[in-house]
Length: 187
Image 1 (tube, rainbow, N blue to C red):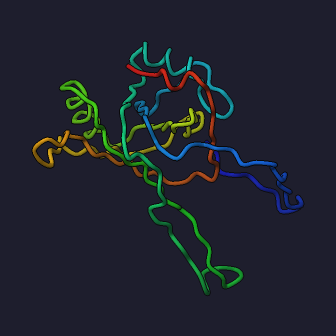
Image 2 (image 1 turned 90 degrees about the horizontal axis):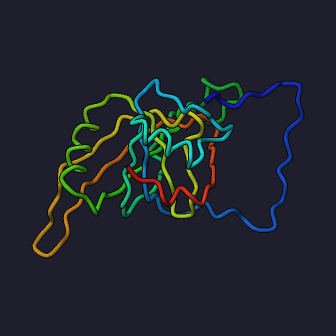
Image 3 (image 1 turned 30 degrees about the horizontal axis):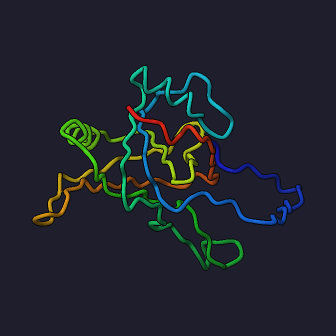
């Protein structure tokens, strides 16, 4: 995905005033991973469709992890320069980092082994899905290094879980694609 492209001679774009906001969802409910260098056969302009994900899952190119609880995306920091380092002397931010994190609550031994294997990759492409059937990551996904913990058991009668997080740098564009069939994606 390219960064935003601008031209110094163009006037500023004017946003429309929506009558109501778009509900992208509040919770990350599943994530998809693909090896670096993989591609979708038919990439949409803003991101893959559910049928494209299904084809990639069947071909073994993409793996989906669902049954995520407490999943969300947060800002995790940025590089800021100010003063003499900027033209105006004001503060400028770049390389904004985000984190997608959550807990895998419903799992079996195969999910445990999968997370242990994915934890060994230094670079993967990731897409995340919200509870309103939106997929974020654009056509190529976010470049991440996944971090999965071991199976955590906090006490008697408490179900175990596998916490995870993936950090990525903002690319300047936040693609969101909605497809009602995203809810049915699984391995």
